[in-house]
Length: 155
Image (cartoon, rainbow, N blue to C red; front, top):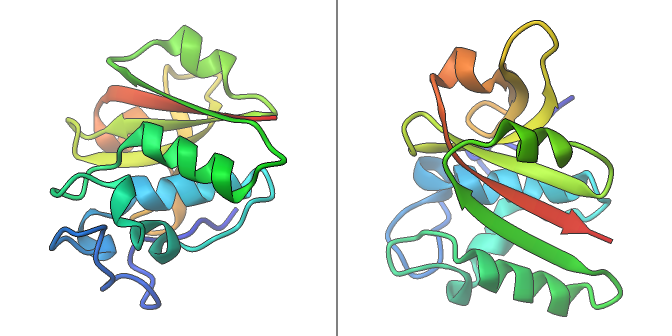
């Protein structure tokens, strides 16, 4: 599968909210949200999400509750819920790797976000869609740890 990349020249230089950060430099969470929503047939590029100042802190961090509100307003015929968790719960992550849900993983000591695709059978790891290169990787094998996660549900 091909994933959106935060380094795509169409948006890598775009600013995140009102911050001085660009999507190319710090847009992994935003790009992962776009990759996750594409699983539900909701398509938009990271620069569209990044252009909404109200969805981010002044430092360019996502305000997850605001993203949920924005999605509900943009797609009123769908029901959205977004939950942010700290730490790692394999039970919760695996339970939400199913139709109607998407899981974003915070990896690399809280410095990067990826979209979980599936739990690997032979290793205690996850295959993930990585926004850095727009390719598949592994959460633990490539990034050492999982320090948090976000569950997105759409019905």
